[in-house]
Image (cartoon, rainbow, N blue to C red; front, side, top):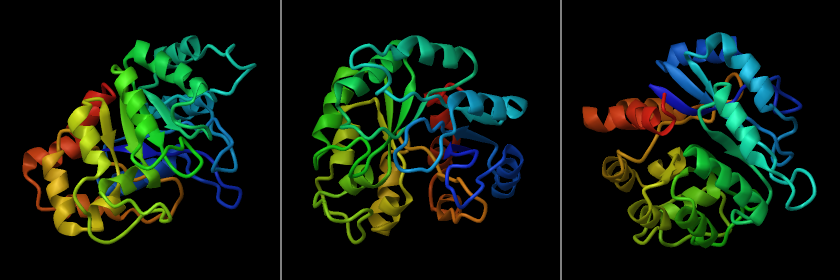
Length: 268
């Protein structure tokens, strides 16, 4: 199995976070062969940064198993002067396998964000996108995000977090973080999956809120979904591990979701 979303280093003041050794021991217990590790280079959401340079250093001894992503803050320098392309290209040359986690507190379609998308489009790489009420904020229906999908066709956008996965249902509850209850037809996530081949996603809560729908969703989109835990601290619960191991999926669907799609998206 390949976990496409984990963290290393101290991100929270009251928790030391994970060392590579601790992460690898946890991976071994879960049956996870490789993991894609997020860089955090913006001040939103978390207490500390784990920069791309730190991540490249931490993962270097175990690069066969720990695959780093890179990130920048698109608000660097005076507006319009920041050129992220050479920085991101350099990080890719040093061993990064994509861009993420995009945690910037700007609208998803802000022009400063677009400089990053343009760079990733030129490099034909994936971006892990976090969506909530402040980070990559968008209107219900993800209209701004759709414009980015339409504009940057070479980017493999990976959807993640509350305001992406609430859109699995047609009746979006704007007051809820992760909604529960039955999924109604007309969700934007599936509409975007059908329309844009450069969109993907991750979300245990969305899959299990309506178990019958969730299982069919996994089967229907087996070629677009990737297993991920967002593991970042010792003792963190990761129910998606047991769920995906025990879900009544075909061997083909299980292998695509837990490994093959990740190998293709991140060129592992």
